[in-house]
Length: 285
Image (cartoon, rainbow, N blue to C red; front, top):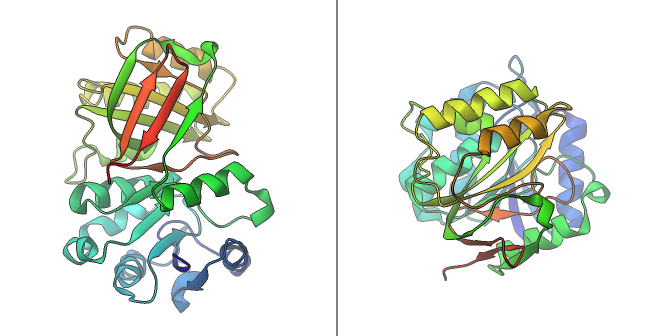
């Protein structure tokens, strides 16, 4: 698997970030294709919504690539959702990789098509800024190799064992899906959550909104990743919010907007065991 298609479905990608993205993918061993309009700018975004949804559809239809990477997140991916060719996307069986704003693409495409969607690195930073574990985990997951993560006792918010399909991502994007045809389905799932540069009190309110919307009602377990630059009191807010849950919950796990950033494959089996201080990913096929 050495042919990639590079897209920019969210924030504006300038020429420097594009060159960095291309160099990073080259150093990862990929031959890369992209559309010329990837550097267009419309307000904050990488071109208007038409350019961006056409780019996504084209990436899935391109016959010479088998994995799709994103330059960056930011905002704007939600604009593309009503215009994606989900029927063709399902036929293509391509892999989509990204995080942050890409969360809403990953969960929507996975839920509508069953295609492989990986919560992993966006590519728009220099290769040497990625931790070795980030790169090795990405390639292991692409090749359907499971992994296990050890954690500390102090990372346990609530003890127990759980098993289920894993879904989730950036909490603000999960919130943004509520009340739309693309709303995330959390029933009987293991839910993983992370956030970046959001005030701690706003994180708390979004968690409450997800709770009121019923998104924690039938969750089997929760894994919390990085809450990067979310305020000095973020841990207190998180502890308070989850204190009365009766499912296994662990925090401070290595995924999200810091390094290392482990790749999490949506829909694959996750197991949490707080007695053994591990959580792991297993592939179904």
